[in-house]
Amino acid sequence: MKIVWDTLSQRDWDAAHGQTAGALQQDWAYGATMRLLGVPVLRALIEQDGGPVGLAQFIVRGFGPLGSMSLCSRGPIWLTAVSATEKDRAYRAVKASMPGRGLRLALITPEESQQQPHGLKAWRRVMTGHATVMIDLDRPEAELRSELDGKWRNRLVAAEASELSAHRIGTNPGQYRWLLDQEEAQRQTKGLAGLPLNFYEPYIGSRQQPSQCVLSLRADLGRERVAAMMFLIHGQAATYQVGWASDAGRDLNAHNLLLWQAMLELRSRGVKRLDLGGVNTVRSAGLARFKIGTGGQVLTLAGTYLA
Image (cartoon, rainbow, N blue to C red; front, side, top):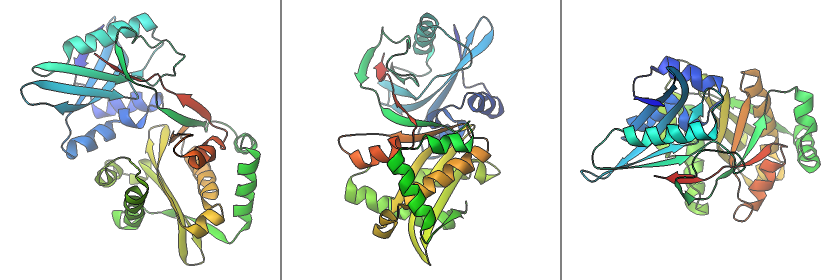
């Protein structure tokens, strides 16, 4: 295995990332936005027998002259079928060649389930696996709707029959800033966590057509905003990021309506995989039931490994 650092162009990275429907954290624009926010980023091209087999984007935290810790979250992206033994060799090569001075620690959170052979057995697991819900959008609309949980679908039908109206939110910051303000408020009151709120504007503006990076929908009751959702788009995949609803929006199942409309819109844009984000059946049981009710696959990742 050979590791080449920070030489691949954005065009080539985007093409490979899009082809594999890679995670948001492995998107070039994600790394570019983190750099704008002052966070160092490293990008590795993994080669075998002279050809590319994987990509890995690391977010770096430096400790001055002592060294650094680099995190590859939801990666690497594997471009070909790679065995666990080959992955092990790749991880060892990444660790040995990682740029920097002093002690260089590496953290890997692979985009693989607990059951899959991931090649990290020689590393020490320091965090248990994150659980999320994945929806395969590369299917007919009727099939997507038929796989909704019965209660979830009934709430959707009720929302569709209500006086709610769904609208797309524009991509100019002034058009979606109010939603981020709502997100900031509920993070403070509910103790929620997420990407820094100053991440969204540069990420959405990172491409010539911002609609390639984001889909935001709003539900209105008459002239009143009652709910909204924001999804970040990265190649052939998208990730649910922000959601808000008023009491009236919750009573009318506005999020069922918005999520269903988002699934159809993302599908029409060529998005094949929708990541609904973390599920915690203990701390946020209601939200977990909402996400699982879409009929998506619950995926528990292998965890975070340190070397």
